[in-house]
Image 1 (tube, rainbow, N blue to C red):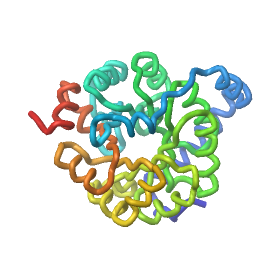
Image 2: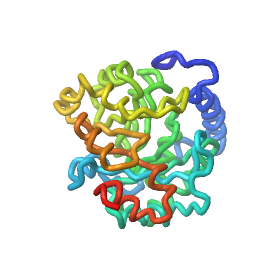
Image 3: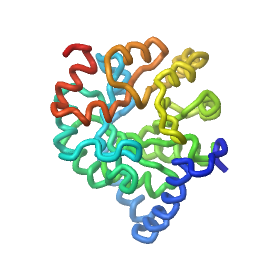
Length: 276
């Protein structure tokens, strides 16, 4: 049972169904025991939350490597994930988000692994996680953090997966879409990163004030617990960044508005400074 009911034809419902099939295929292809053994010998993770907290930029920037999306189609035809990641690093991004979902976003764990080999920044695996096997694959591909979407998981399952992610040395970015979801996930004691997605995944409409609504009465509670608040989706200029910071945001996750620009380094500079 999910945290809340989903309408027929809801995008997350479609993804959840597909991911169940995908996980079954992964379980046939990989031995969980073998993956667990490999993780024991994996390099230590970068500290994703610490990087966001210690950045000299406000808000900290999580720049996203994304080729396509269900709502926009192909965002960048000349997509080179490594070159994009390196451009983000040169431009001063704090962390990177890498899409690994293949069917809906044309990403891959291979992209994540290639980027891990080419940059030093902490990496978020942007995937629709419903099972531990995906978490082990993310860890082995070089992820330092993994996305968990509250509306796709029961509270019990969310807690179990978050615990595993932290046990493996990574962080879990728990994504919510409204105040009810935030209040549910705040019941998890080990929660450290919360993402507020301004995109309604049932309609694909984006409203940046979603962040304001969700944080209005909870910003102080998050800060008192040391939880990092991240605003996601619909952010494309410095004035919007200033607004979300005033609402209590510590970091922003930005992808499409940067990816579609010919000069990604300049795009990051313009976004973060308001110049140009």
